[in-house]
Image (cartoon, rainbow, N blue to C red; front, side, top):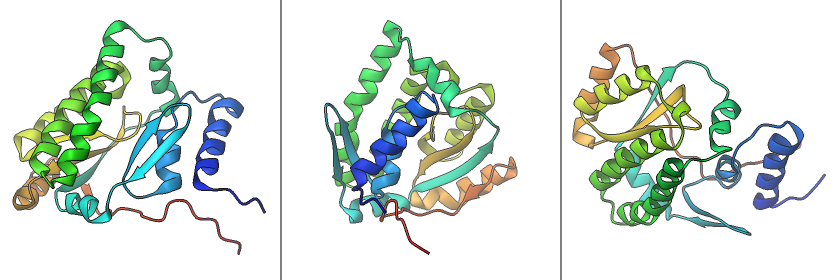
Length: 202
């Protein structure tokens, strides 16, 4: 019976995971799920969510390929790698943060090639930020994808297993998907969810 706005839902979800269940982690996934769409999310004393225009985000869909790489892992265990940060981790995280304005600009300009290149650069930084996000199998899949048409990509979520998202030029997508399927790596149909979290009384 509570009437909660999207920010309150995201904060409560995070509080349950981190403080009630003891699962270490950030707030970005909770905010992404609560708001839906594609957003610039700025974390400070307060969290600011700025939606990107729908037409800009949907333009990227034509160049996105989502694949399932399998494996299992506990997100909270990988996130523990951020509890005590080395200088190199801090440097990598700072560089990831600095890439946000570039990403927003490239999306606004509908410059898919630059989005893909930036994703590649950020993926290298993400691996430096926490050793648990990748492993030799994931690296091999990523390198194979890049040799067969992917401009760039990254693992989704905390890493270690699950799903990877690649940016591929629309004219190269069919060949790219065929090459990945030859390695028994399969693409998944997906779209963007624009409504965010919804509660219905049945």
